Amino acid sequence: MSVTIKDLARETGLTPATISAYFNGGNVRGYNKAKIESAIEKLGYIRNDFARGLRTHRSRTIGVLLPEIANKFSTSIISETEESLRSRGYGIIVCDCRSNVKREREAVRFLLSKMVDGLIVIAEDTGAGACLAATQNGVPVVAVDRMTENPLLSHVIINNREVSKNAVNMLINRGNKRITAVCGDLGIYTAAERFAGYKEAMREAGLEGEIRYVNGDLSIEGGYKAAKKALEEGGGHALFVTNYEMSMGAVMAAKEMGFTAGSDMDFMGFDSLDYFKPFCPGIMTVRQPVKELGRVAAETIVSMIDGGPAQNIVLGAEIR
Image (cartoon, rainbow, N blue to C red; front, side, top):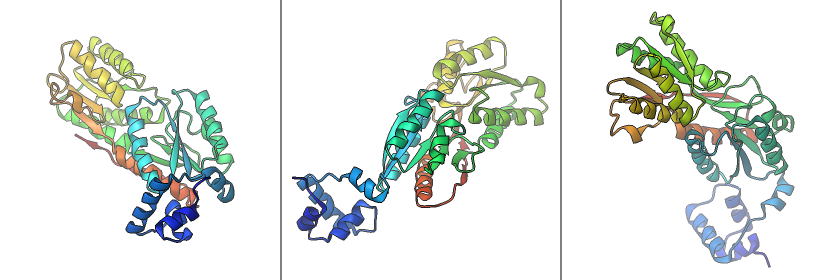
């Protein structure tokens, strides 16, 4: 016979209302939480969220769409998001969309069929069909690292254009005039914004004729090929590389060609490249506030589920 909340109440000496408050993320005193958790472990209690969801019309579950499960930036965000949602009594279902629009739309339909309370999306098709079914069904959506024109979505992003402009200005102030930007497809919001910041810095420095763009395909292999192409074409010894995977590939390409990024050539990458610091000590990076992005995404989706409005939140990145 299944263990019930009444059984937990008898075991702990607490009221069923206190037990329910614990499961619903309510205000329960620390020593009572410890009693409840001990009883759960002892009795093997498993909450029937399916039945509970039928009564409350809430599953306490958030659907998460990732472009690639192997993408370090996305998984770092979701790790923090999961932790923040867990503390609020929510679980997550993660779908790897393989950077494929069709898979994204299929994933949204799957998640909606599981009665998720909201979606957190890091995907290519955020503003189009991927999220349309969710908003049409009244399911809140938070887009992370993407900005769309959909007023029903919340957006959590960084100051992509501003920080990219500042990063390129640092390269220019170090005496570089020929700087190649290695970006993703410019149809992607982040790639377009970061390239726009690069162009602004170059134009304001009177270097418009030196603007160079190579598509690194947002991957390690793509960054390797793009950096190699730029350096072989004599694009100068300064690279501005706009995501983590491409930055890794670009550093490897430079090393293979006899350059040491951060030493005999200036290199500005994205996110933590600490792995390369021992043999590329002068490497510079734009550090995105990954933990804050994940935490704010969790807070925002819970706020929307509770009836709060859609909002656009811009966080600041820093250069190290």
